[in-house]
Image (cartoon, rainbow, N blue to C red; front, side, top):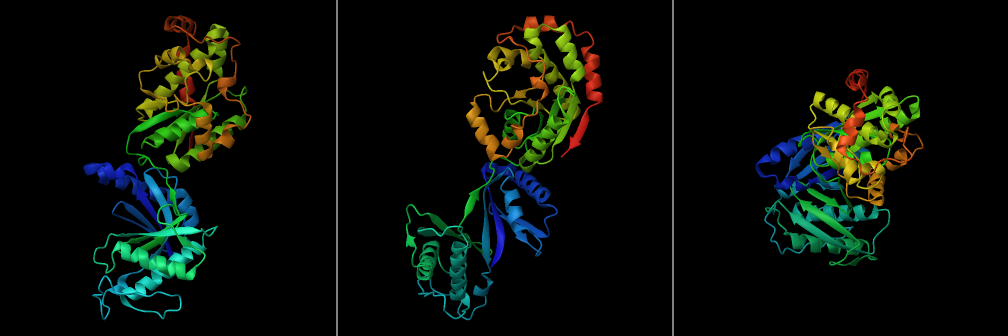
Length: 419
């Protein structure tokens, strides 16, 4: 039984005249994800991408796992491929659509439509038996894209359903609420599958500009980056590192988070900014209750400079209204004032439980909860200002007379990790 991966588009089908651009980018992203897995062919037709192994060393299961995480794909499955070319050139090719075809496993090999139906029936049974748990109820759905195929969709579904019942008598047909649907797609070839899974959805990364993520070691910011990348945005990341107040393990943790994100976001350049000197200066010269807000404003200014240098058009943060003192409406307002670039906050209206659920889905949660501090947890004031006024922040920042030079030095000595 020859197997192939079918990946179906999501909202890309609605892109009209721009659809080809989205398709080309999606195909490029798939190639990038599957490199070094072995030889395969990659084609598309009628909003479906076909990934077919061309060598024995191609790891189909690993490829399936990678394709599921590529933005732009709504449904993905491993299907069995049946060659329907034996219908062509048969001695009696014009089989009437009501031609009785009786199928059993012991039927001798036949040519034409009868032989094809034999093979489809056997393959459908194999697909069901390969499942981890044999279902109790099923139905067969057929899509006949090739209108020259002698049997129409209802006839094919009924015929293959009868074959399955004959071979697995413990099954029952349920056309309204089946445990499993056996899908048959009649295209250039015939594809049979009984287990399809949701893809990542969204739009292909690289179709909607570029943004820079402020990546901490926490739960929220990787989720924020994932959500913006899902809209087709290329994401790079900036992390502020305060050694020795934060450890090498804290840095390694952030690199691991960014690496995990690449499964969805594609390549990420991670900019690790040395922030110790700036943080010490803020702690020494600024009012204690404003420390976190001033720190955030300077982080935003540095991130904006890096974003502009790398061609990014927006910043991304993992802030959620009211989650901590620096994320009140007033605090977010004075933070935004520090930059001229748009700031995307995709988790702004989510509670922690919702964010955690996504973090677990994208496999960043377990890394995020490792007990290594990031710079945001250093020098935290006992009584932070929750309703700051912009004038207060601007007045307090006057004490940082060397801040421009310090920011330039931090950017100059930034470490770049390409993932």
